[in-house]
Image (cartoon, rainbow, N blue to C red; front, side):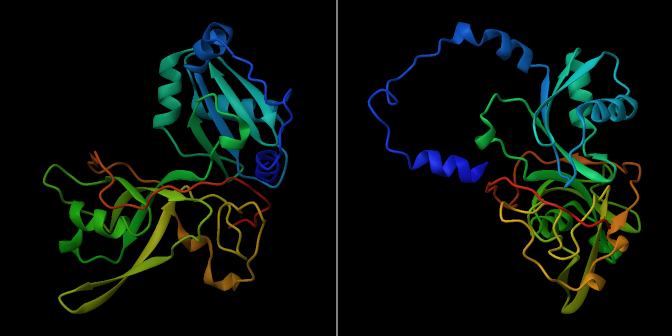
Length: 265
């Protein structure tokens, strides 16, 4: 899809082709009104999944108050039309969603053309393991999390402490990048290896260590023993949680879209 868009941008238009056709707002009002109840979803999978299968699966998982419809736009790209606005909010607040252990990236409907749609980012609960208890704080969570992606939340109590065997941080990841296995930190001149585990981690390509391949497909030949099911953590109840109001130095978005096959983890 991106290659086609680039080719279009290189075309030299004739006079007739360059004649502007004005589309009035009233001509698209029905879609704009419907769009308020819509979500765009991209299933990161090498297999084509039928829209009826998608609907049947998420009808059971989402347990919405109203009904919803699924429209297939192209390969594994869907528009979900929900009957009730609050159901849309429920689905978005409950992310992330998996189908057969494959990631469904959901965005709010914005009416963009296919070439401009971006499904490269999703938020995960990431657990920072092996931290000393005095490092289980909001500040440490943001500091380490910002080296992984955009930090949205650190799961802490009202005192700003995340008591537990690990520190949970909600981080928006670029799913085209290699999954991080950990970070090296220093505390009082002591080197600490902080292993990372991910709640609801979907299938991962062992060769390139990514959830999603970029437009060129898989270019990796990595050691499969370096990645395994130990990267996956079971979802756990929220311990507290303070939402971020800003980026706090996290990674900035950059976008292109593409997908190919994956190997299960």
